[in-house]
Image: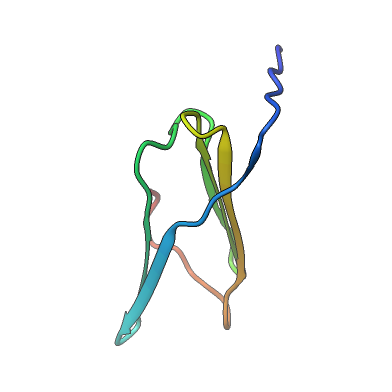
Length: 77
């Protein structure tokens, strides 16, 4: 296993919106030119973690949110 560590210059901001319709909650993060191979979204039953890496700026968007109540995932993204 090989790990490649990159020095990240700084943090960047992305627009984040959410809305709820009945039992559904939709979270949208608006980001351009991030690297999907090094970025990740992790969802547990009580926490959402997002880290998007932007190679052109050498920056990262990082967000951790504690979810209200317990989330039950009916499908995988």
